[in-house]
Image (cartoon, rainbow, N blue to C red; front, side, top):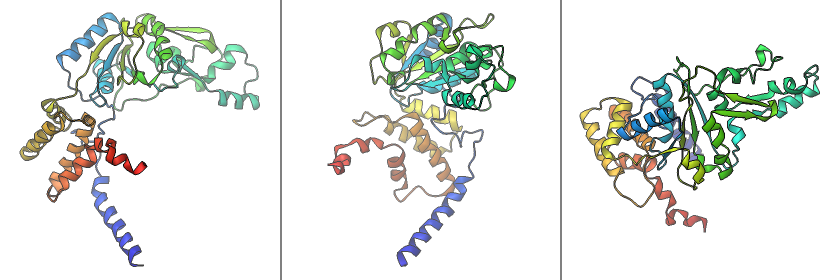
Length: 342
């Protein structure tokens, strides 16, 4: 009975301590933003990144970004979409991805259900298939009007039109064009990469079930879609694919850049906390044998420190505990930590 009472007391304390944290919302200072949210409203461009983006716009080539996880590859795409005022679409590759997944997907289950209930009566061929075609990110990026009409079927009713997925909050495109993110392309096999050569090079995509070719509409920006592709270098990419891309490797941020990113996210810090953040940034970016600390992980730690700096003392080993929870994850990969499996 005593053990159960202590357990209940612990639960009560936990809920009491969590209550102030549960009230935190996203503010102008980014206090409620997640480090991996890809919100795209904050990004610090280096001269090299800025040059690479300009070259991608001028040449119409996809921009392939390499570098360690968490160095800011994926978030660049959403940032560019906001700054350019265009729509944003993304696709995360997996080992099962096919090139067609980027363009279209057939909702075969819904189509079969409608066929069983006679909802398809009176429709044949393309007209019977169009309502069940889900346009993919590349289709939306190439020609949003065609995607909305699922290929422009004459028999498509208004309530059957497609709607693009909402990717960015507080972002309404105000000009034609799109930014397309193809994330972690190294997760997919060589066939996926090779299948993108024609669509990305010619700005055209074929939709087999409808027997139509999607093209960029007249009047669209010559650079659209601006395609950003990321890789963690877990797998070699086909040479033919690399030749068709612009390539830029983003390095791990050093201590100074980490601090700049923190200030960009959260604004100026109190003097004591700023010095602590600088010290932690230098420590986190020192050469080590474990996995590197990502920008998002460091932002997580600073986010907690900002709250605790206002609420309680950081003594009694709390800072070391927070570092272990947020940053020192490479310890999980050590031989000692895996020994319990044997």
